[in-house]
Length: 122
Image 1: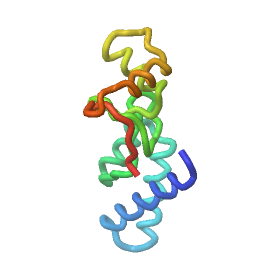
Image 2: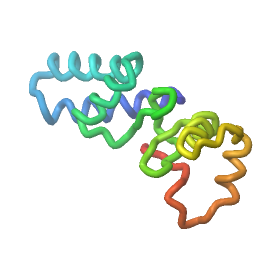
Image 3: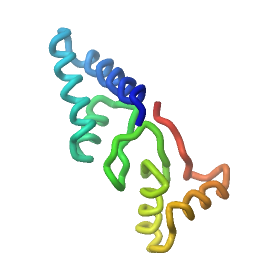
């Protein structure tokens, strides 16, 4: 992710926190704690922060657990890269041969009306 992505995520968190709490000090402390958990927490902790504050600006990769602002949406699974998408595909379809390059080609050759696509949650 880029620096601007981190700033945008922090701003989203701070806005969400300010709707739940009053007092500048409490808002700042809660927003910093939530942002830190998004950066270094477990995938479950990251998802809990996203759910708690109803953040629409980011997701957690279901394979590697990284925070992301863009990625694949495949059958409602969120994946950050061709590498993670290939691992997901191989697990879902019991095909251990598809490579990240093969997956990228599969997506570029795909149907425009497909439920599988690359998107941004920014």
